[in-house]
Image 1: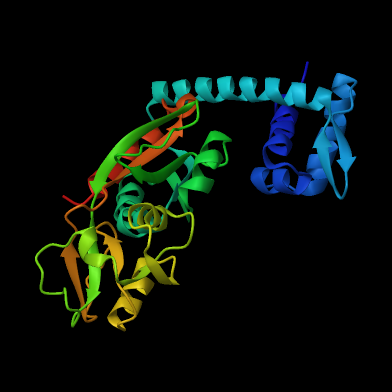
Image 2: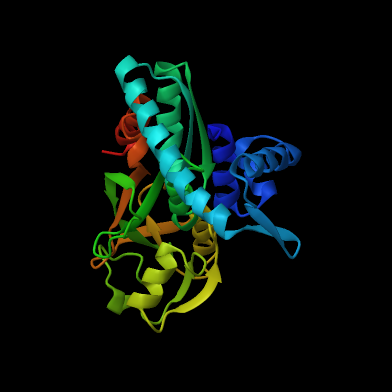
Length: 294
């Protein structure tokens, strides 16, 4: 009979693409991974991996077994989640990722509430963009993630993931306090065509929206963090579009003006369907909802 833990090792190698990655994922040494793979090859009577340059790749037999292992491990996770639900205890470890503004605006109060209510639950958080967090959840590298999309351009989630909307977030235009438009009660994109823009880097949500909506936008500075963008605005170096979520009070000489045709983003949590019955997943989602601004 095949050993489940060795199948888990094979799945980790297939998921991460390397022995080193599998070792990091499983929190073991690389030699332990290699030993388990060698034993699995003995059990199956087949070569499961082969050298490719300085790394390895799965053979045809390895790919076949890894696919079957993924299905089996998903079923095991489903069974374990069902048993945890039966016992009703909120215990164990859970990994959670969130994009930067959600990590700043939602996670601190949610994690504080969880630590107070469920001392036997350990939640580990990392800051990660949706493009990395979504495949990590699907592949089992994360238990949950807080991600984002535009309400009028929803994200297509991979099969096997479930989601729940946490909040709809809106945006304002950040202008230097002495800007010619700073006294306006609202602005439109038509008002801003000749401005210098400060935005996030290419590939991030705000940047893509700006390029799509204002095709001639002059992007003069990019910064990943909104506080950095606000500091650049305060220095008179351009304007920026800033979300409400995670925005901290600032004494900087900046004025926030609503944008009449502003985008609205949906902030939502995702998790694997196979883990949906875990009580720990449910209480984390509840804590995230409670942490959302009114």
